[in-house]
Image (tube, rainbow, N blue to C red):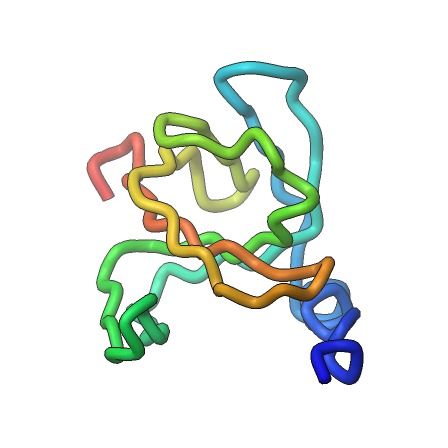
Length: 109
């Protein structure tokens, strides 16, 4: 059944995403097409409960950032630099499943 939705996260990121510079603690910097949001969002937590995230978030395909870890950074030219604080995996078995990261702005955001 998941094959029906395979590729949807990639399509959405391609349509609504931007090129964001990813700076992992281990490994080379690179640009990834992904989605940054400064406004609060709601996601479904692992236990099925709705979780409100008030911090800025970064939604990225997990297979594009396999080394993703707390403390990694992203940079948006017009917005600034952010540090990954918490990661929420989508739980999807699809090859293009996303991870949602809660961020902390390096300018105190």
